[in-house]
Image (cartoon, rainbow, N blue to C red; front, side):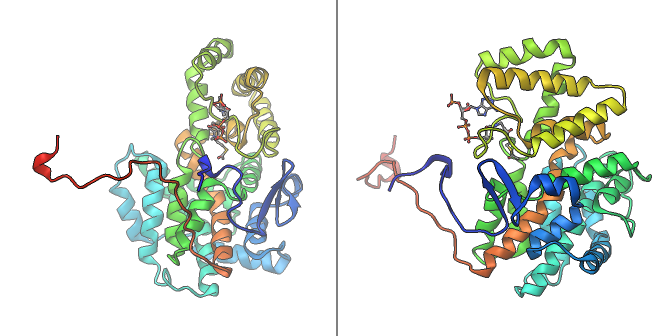
Length: 371
Ligand code: ACO
C-alpha cells in the first residue's frame, strides 16, 4: 500500500453532476461558459439536483418552494443572537446549519422525496442564515426574506434592508452560478464521505461547510481581500508580492489542483471586477488584482482561481469580506446536496486505507517505567 498525498489524481467515485475535462467545466454536460452567460442560479440548482434544465412550470414551482422554505425558525435566530459577535462567520454558519437539523422533523427521514425537499430547504435557508449572521454581528435585527425575489436579490435585500440595484443582482447571480458545483472538490468529498455512512443531509452539509472554511479551499477569497487591504495602493503591489515570492509564501487565489492552465470561472469574475470598478469610477482594486496576476503568472506560471477576482467583485458590491466564504456556501450548497442525493443512489461507505509509517514491534511500558 502506497499513499498518494492529497489523493492527487485518485478517482474516488463516478458522478453525473459536473466534470472537468481539459480545463472545461460542465454541469450536467453543459459548459459553464454557456450557463454563466444564460442561466439564472435557480435554474442551475434545479439542473444539479434533477439532471435537466427546468421548464417554465418546474422553475416556477421551485421558486415557490424556495419562497416557502426561506424563513428560518425564530428559535434559531434567538440562538444565533447568543453567538459572539466577532466570531468567524463560517464557524457561525457551520453551527447554525447543524442546529437547523434540530428544527426539521424530517431530518432523519431517508426517503428520496424527503431528501429532495431538504436539499431545496437548505438552499432556501442558507442565504437567510448568512444575511441574519451579518446583521446580528452589526447589532442589527435580521430582516425576513421577501417572496417573489431570486436568491441573489433576496440575499442582498436581507443584508441591507433595501431593494438592491439590477447590476448588483446580476453580478451576484452570475457569481452563484459559477460557484455552484465543482466535481469532487474538498468540501463535496467531505459531504459525500459523511453521508456515505447513511448519516443525514444536515450532517453532510455541516461537514462540507467545515471543509470549505479553510483558506486552501473556499476561505481563500477572504484571504485575497486581506491581502488587497494590506497592500493598500497600486504602487505597493510590486514590493509586497515580490517579498512574498522571495519568502516562498503562497499567494491566495492562485493555483489549483486540477486546472493547470487557468480556471474557466476566473475570467467571468475578472470581467465583473473590471466592469464594477468602471461603473463606480474606481478601478483601484481591479488594477491591483491585475498587477498581482501579472507577477504571479509571470514568475510562478500560476493562474488565478475562482477565489481571486471574487474578492474585488464582492467588495465592490458593498459586501464585507467576512461574508465572502459564506456566499460561496450559499451557492455550493446546491452542489453539495446534489452530490449527497447522488451518493445515496448507489451508496457504499467510503473507507480508504492509510499506509502505516509509524513504529513497529513496540511493547507496552508500565507507567512507572516510562521516561
Ligand atoms: N502561491 C504560490 N505558490 C503556489 C501556490 C500559490 N497560490 N499554489 C501552488 N503553489 C506552488 C506550491 O508551493 C508548489 O510548489 P513546489 O512544488 O515548489 O513546492 C506547487 O505550486 C504545487 O502546488 P501544491 O500546493 O502542491 O498544489 P495542490 O494541488 O496541493 O494545491 C491549492 C492546490 C491548494 C489550490 C494551492 O494552489 C494553493 O494553496 N493555492 C492558494 C489557496 C487558494 O487559492 N485556494 C483556493 C483554490 S480554489 C477553491 O478551492 C475554491
